[in-house]
Image (cartoon, rainbow, N blue to C red; front, side):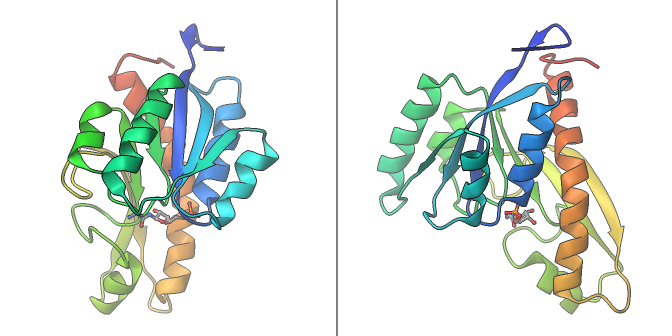
Length: 198
Ligand code: GAR
């Protein structure tokens, strides 16, 4: 499959939950000018709601049990290499990948995080942002390195917090912007890597 003269990048998306980012990335991948082809979806949760999207679009998907992390990661590495996956997009994937795994896909893993990194790494970001009376929050797409939520930032979107916002309304607002940001960040990342141009 080609896009702008480039081969579309074989991409895997990792999820744990609702999969609204996955849904959005599938939509993005199906547009003619998209640089990516989503070939595989991985979930660590068998009940992840987001699994309905690969089913709906006939995309290959698999659930992995992370109770033995190094064993399952080795299996995933094998599966992804076999499928010639060149880009991994973490989209609400809540397991922390090991250094070994990240090394195997160096500079090939992106993550979306619901805060203005480097602020509010980790979980429960919106709750902490509200508790700290922040005026702004946002979302970030970054390259995944061995340190949690700390790799090179590709794009960020800043969002104003209103007095009436609570962590639920904030989560909704941020998620809406994530859906705009992630496809843009993927394009930018691939342009920087010279795998795509506009
Ligand atoms: C998104 O807000 C994403 O940024 C966040 O989980 C949500 C998943 O929503 N990710 C993290 O918190 C990672 N630390 P989705 O399943 O609807 O895409």
